[in-house]
Length: 232
Image 1 (spheres, rainbow, N blue to C red):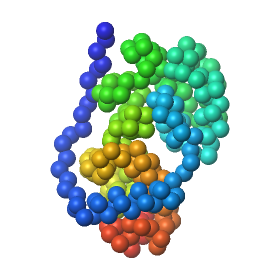
Image 2 (image 1 turned 90 degrees about the horizontal axis):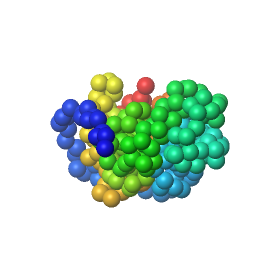
Image 3 (image 1 turned 45 degrees about the vertical axis):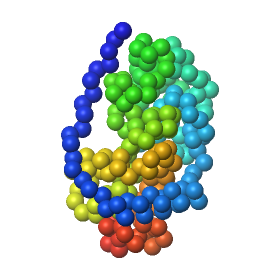
C-alpha cells in the first residue's frame, strides 16, 4: 500500500488569547449564526465528496453562482468514483462557466488519487487529506470539520479578515497568517467546530465585509481591536 506523502507542517507560533474576549466572541458569534446563518445546499449533507466539491467550487467564486452548478455537477458525477472514471475535459465542460479553470482538473485528479489510494473514500486524517495533490490546509480543515464534525481550524479570506480585525487590529494580515491559524484553532468551542466555522465564514461575508463593514451594528464592536477605526 502506498504511504501518503508527508505534509509540510506550519511553523510554531506563540500567541495568547485573552480568555474573556475569547469567550465573548464565541458566544456572540454562535448567537449571531443562530439568527442569521445562511441556508446553503452543502450544509444539508455530511458526504465528504459533496463537501469537497462545494469547497473547490467556492474558491474565488460567489455563493450565488456556485449553488446551481453544485447541483448540476453532482447530478452528473454523484460520487468520487464517477468523477474519477470520467475524462478530464468532460469535467471541465461540466464545470463551465464557473471560471478559474484549473479547479475541475484539480478536482478530477483528487478523485483519481482517492480511488487509487483509498478505494474512493476521502480519508479524514489531516495528513492524508493534504497528501492529495490539490488539497491544502484550508480544504483539509473544511472536509474534516463539515464532513467529519471535527474541531479543525479553517482560514479563508473571510475568516482571516474577521479574526485579524477583531483580535489583532494592526499589522499586515498577510504577514500574520500563521498567527491567525493558531487563533482560529484556539477559538473553536469544543465540539462546536461545524457551527463555529460556518459562522465565521458567514459573518465575514455579510457583516465584517472587505468593503463597508457593518461596524455600527456588529456584535463584536465593544471589544474589536479595529473598531471604531474603519478598516481598509
